[in-house]
Image (cartoon, rainbow, N blue to C red; front, side):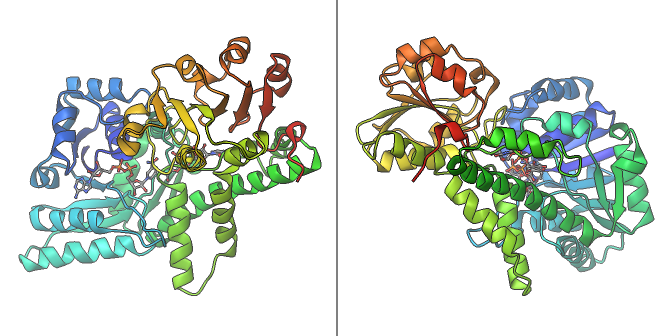
Amino acid sequence: MKVSIFGAGYVGLSFAACLAEAGHEVLCADADLARIEGLQRGLMPLHEPDLEALVAAGLAAGTLQFTADERTACLHGDVLFIVVNTPADAEGRVDLRHVMAVAAGIGRHRDREAVVVCKSTAPVGTADQVEAVLSGELSQRGAQLRIAVAANPEFLREGSAVRDCRRPDRVVIGSENPWAVDLLTRLYEPFIEDPTRQLLVMDRRSAELTKYAANAMLATRISFMNEMARLAEHAGADIEMVRRGIGADRRIGPDFLQAGAGYGGSCLAKDVRALRYAADRDGHALRILSAVEATNHEQKSRLFDLMTHHFEGRIAGKTIAVWGLAFKPDTDDMRDAPSLVLLERLWAAGARVQVYDPAAMPNARGLIGERDDVRWCDTAQEALQGADVLALVTEWAEFRRPDFAGIAKALRTPAIFDGRNVYDAAEVESAGIAYYGIGRGRSSLLH
Ligand SMILES: NC(=O)C1=CN([C@@H]2O[C@H](COP(=O)(O)OP(=O)(O)OC[C@H]3O[C@@H](n4cnc5c(N)ncnc54)[C@H](O)[C@@H]3O)[C@@H](O)[C@H]2O)C=CC1
Ligand SMILES: O=C(O)[C@H]1O[C@H](OP(=O)(O)OP(=O)(O)OC[C@H]2O[C@@H](n3ccc(=O)[nH]c3=O)[C@H](O)[C@@H]2O)[C@H](O)[C@@H](O)[C@@H]1O
């Protein structure tokens, strides 16, 4: 099938490469010319496991092509996906300008029937708006084309985008138009093993709300566990034991129960904010979500609070080694990363940092810029040299089994602040290093 994809970001590019791998003829468009020129030469604009090889394979096979030309992209596909960014402001108002720009472009250029699919995360009613913009453009030039608009939210995670695209838990098709549903069902066929379980067809508004509800539920689980972690700290319990204990209940399940330094990334916070804003505006305050946000806001300062406790308030002049800057492992994405809050708080308190991340250094450096109180290190080992203590913020695989004896030697006053609970406290302590985790009763902060 011929497919056009507008947006070559984390989602658009991963989705395009997977569709091309499955044999579809994919043209991926982006408004960013430099990004497209790079992609045409096989240069990746972002870090995502397995994606580079998949893009190269698609380019070589000719099933994946890139363009910065809106018209070409509007004319190529039988199905056209809108996968552009949909940022939300501080209050939660979602900026739909990019989505509507694509819709208007399709309305201006399209010369035959099409199924237009909104994959960007966007508030309930966005597909209706896309339809209105499209028909406005079509009627302005007197064109009468059969165009169906569907909502098809995306649930992939960064760091496993390719895997998630190839094997989605479910595909949600929001459309009551049999033609659009049939086309999308055929398009997704290579990724679906069990249609009765994985393929969910519903109306557009339900599909749009499903996306927000999913991210809000995930964020709620994390904030719930972070609150339990605080309680565990005070009660002398270990949240890791509690996590196993409740995760074994099939009604709860083991995933997304990891307490830590707070959730970050481009979407959970943005989408919770947007959902809360939309609900408030319609007079249906979502009280749970306000609590989820407040807890996460505090949680991002948790490592800093533990350090304040450890240093008895005297953080000025200390040097902190920081392992991991990206908002999660296996990505270079720094959007809303919890590490940024830790760094800001340390700098405000007069500390210096020595930072290392396997993939996010260029993005972090671009965001933060050069300053005297940060040293950008080439290795995890280099970040330790001469530092007082170590903070682990992102649980990259390369940080999981470190040489604790080496860490004990490198640090001036050996202590580890484990923001993702990846280390065994007893093992760390037996190397002569003080251990602080999130919600680990052994390192309880009894105020
Ligand atoms: N990042 C993620 O893990 C997930 C994101 N989403 C949603 O998917 C959408 C895209 O997210 P990301 O890929 O992370 O964004 P991104 O910021 O990485 O990429 C968006 C791309 O769209 C391009 N763009 C903007 N306006 C355009 C236009 N008029 N024509 C063509 N290209 C245009 C931008 O230049 C950019 O390259 C958002 O709505 C997001 O909420 C959904 C699921 C997962
Ligand atoms: O809409 C989106 O953009 C996507 O948002 C999240 O995916 P993503 O942000 O890529 O990554 P997650 O694995 O969800 O992690 C988000 C944050 O939560 C944190 N987290 C995750 C899981 C956990 O148990 N505890 C926890 O603190 C991570 O460290 C990270 O900072 C959702 O998991 C995806 O389903 C969704 O498609």
